[in-house]
Structure formats: C-alpha cells, structure tokens
Image 1 (cartoon, rainbow, N blue to C red):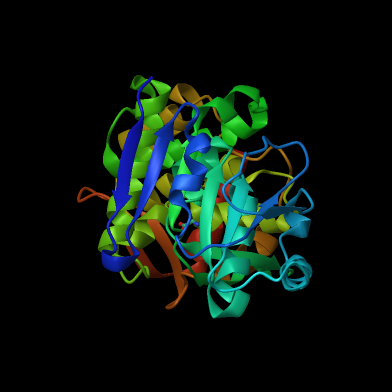
Image 2 (image 1 turned 135 degrees about the vertical axis):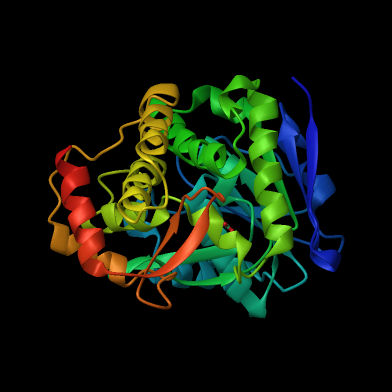
Length: 338
Ligand code: GLY
C-alpha cells in the first residue's frame, strides 16, 4: 500500500490529507509551530494516538448522535479552560465523523478560532467528514443546524485504523463512496483501499478548493443527503448516516426520473450500484410517515428556495430548487413501498 498526500488548496489555509498505513505516527509533524499544548478529543473504544512532542490531555465524548449537541461543546469548552488551552495551541480530533464535526466546531469557537488536526479513524471520516471544514452539532429540529466553516490544519487517514472497524461502520463509508461514484463517474470499488480512499479525498478536496462556502459546486457533495438527513432525524438515528445517504441516492434518482431529468435506465443504475455493487440497503426497513420526512426535508439547510435536492440529469448532477412538495411526497410514497 502506498502513502498518498492530497492538498486542499485554499491559499494560506491550504492543508494536506495524508492517506496510508501508520500515518497517524506523523501527527507531531502536522501541529502548528505555535502549539505548546494539545487537547485530544476522542471516544471510548477508538484507536489511541501517540503525541510526545507537546503536553496533551485527552477528553472522551459520548458515543452516538445524541451527544453531538451544544451541551457537549459547552462541556468541552469548560475542559479547555481548566487545561489552559490558548488560541496558539491545538485541538486534535481522533475518531469518526461525529468526533471530527464536534472537535472542529469546538475549535472554531474556542477563543474565536483554534487550530484543529483530524486523525480520521472511520472510512466515512476519511473519505468525507474530516475533510472540508464544515463542522457542527445537532439540535432537535435537525442535524448539523448549528456549526461553522473551520478548516483543519491537516487530516491523517491511517488505514491501519480500518482493520478493527465494525461492519456497520464500513457500510457507512461505502454509502459516501457510492456518492462519489455518481459525482465522478469512476468505479471506485475497482481501486485498492489506499487508492480508493485517496481518490475520494481528492474528489472532495478539489470541490472544496473550488467552492469552500458552498456557493455552487460544493452543494453536489450533498447528493443523497436531503432524504438521508430526514431519515436520520425522524428515525432518531436508527439508520446511520452513510447508510441513509445510500438510500437518499436511490430516492434522488426516482425523483429525478419523476421530474423528467433522467430515464428509467439511469434509475436502475442507481438501484444496481447502491444495492448490487456496493451491497447497501436502497430503502429503510423501518416504516416512516411521509409527513414526518417531509417536514424535515422542508427545514433542510439547502432549502433556500422551495424544496431543494441535488438531482441527476443528462448534464450530470445539479442543484434543483423549487420542487413542488407534492411531487416529492408522491415520489417518496412510491419509493418507500417499491
Ligand atoms: N466536515 C465535512 C465537510 O466539510 O464537508
């Protein structure tokens, strides 16, 4: 397996994503030179990282989306204060997407912005969540509704950490990789693991570099996410994020078809890639009320004008605004019972 280095090119805020076996041992090389101390934010049961270059303390946050909230940010901030963490120091997020989102948001707010380095330990975090600078926490009204754009100083994707990953976590990562399949048109499962993770990181890095604040192209990274967030919120996270994204990709294809944007073969391709090639569930097994899903979809952050989805077309993926709620609801009805 090779070591890959991908740069997220954001001028003075550019940063490397390092992919390979054992790369978390490089952590000290990626800390800001001003850092005199570090807070490591992680969870029980995750791989630990060695940091001998500067004094550090480790804080473990709760597992599960119910801990991804403002109470966790307050409690972390109070621990930063007791440790004497300053804006010249560094926060290190070691974990999956929940840890990197929370650590990133805590870093964005601590002393109005403190450096953060992510050591991604899940497939989903390596290919998506740790990269791109969107950080945040949930409130009962929806996922990630409170947050900030705050880019990390480096992202380390140590493939050794994937060896002990539970099967369900691998499925979550595959949901996001399936998304990149449709964004890039590449058969990413045909690559070796290191090249596959690096290819996904490169797709994301390139899009973030072109559109950091999601004024345009970056919104394509939300492919599959509108229904996914609704399934996660209504189901109280009984369906994990990446698995919900896989379902959202298939639903988006059905909606694009209903709107006359793609033909039936393209819908079948989505069903086959997600359900066959990637071996993921294309629909929830739990019964969801359409009205409940619709009310979360209407609150989606992307919905600046009517209902908004990223949808496929002959020209590729596009953000489509002002979709009639009744069209979405009818498509949902057909999709859920198929
Ligand atoms: N943290 C995920 C992103 O920026 O897209």
